[in-house]
Image 1 (cartoon, helix red, strand yellow):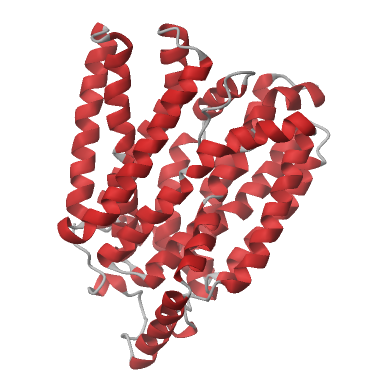
Image 2: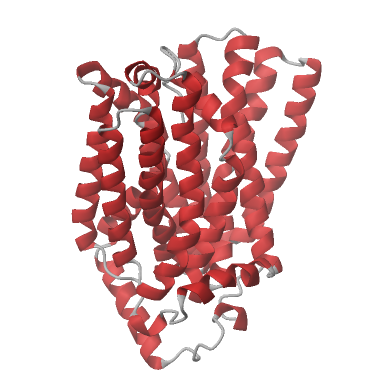
Length: 406
């Protein structure tokens, strides 16, 4: 899979060839981004972290929410499944909107929806009402995530895009590491509703910070097609072999990651009798592994190329998966026989996800928003079932919420 950003696939049907005006506009945007690099990095990291903070922060409150709303655990778990469904489908809308109208305006509208949804969650009086507002919250939050990825592609190409994505994902890894702990602290001094009011504040603060973020898609480079036609182009994108390869690698790996999230509490705590506190340490070690490999990827991508590193990461994850299957079947190595290959598998994230996203975005740079949406949907769509919500519920029980993650 080579970076075909300069090929005919990189332009949408009916668009004029790249002109001097387009090149000058793109250069101006990149110059502005270069002048305010750390600030833009911080804002993009915050935008991409919305997927995590929207759920990780309130996981410790699930039991209290069920009690306050007079609902059983299954009904409250639907707030996670509903969020994943809204997050997955919402991306497919925001991607083409971002290609047509630019990045900042759709992100701002999405943040307003996120604030409204968070406030609705805080004021909910039933589990069904909470699920509904969580869907609104998710549709708003996903605009930030999908278009932040597209903005990276607007500003960077090739190995620089993969390097920037790795840096952003390293920063993002802090959110699932700290989110449940922060949520627990909020619960210690206030009710579960305060967590959603905190999310309202986060949304408003991000909306204010958006003013410092330049528009990365100049008018000359936007896709003027009607939204109906733009949405139909997903079928065209899926016919591109390179896109299928990148989306397949990222999507299948994300499916395995969610299996890891769902299965490790039972494997560690129930089967190997690990204490919930030590399980938190083991889970945090995996997050650290992801951060380390993301940084290694950022340093190595220029030398080896994003495709080669992605293949190496996928091969390493496959080997770790085989070792895990053997360990699970034979109980070889006991707890250590499970921990070591799982750590290797999770750490492969740093070589797979950022490179898969950057490669897919490079295939159709003129449709970076739609491509980002397609990649995001392939990651979140397959896991919007009761599997992750059941795992999250387990980890949200008293004493077991510290390691929870998205």
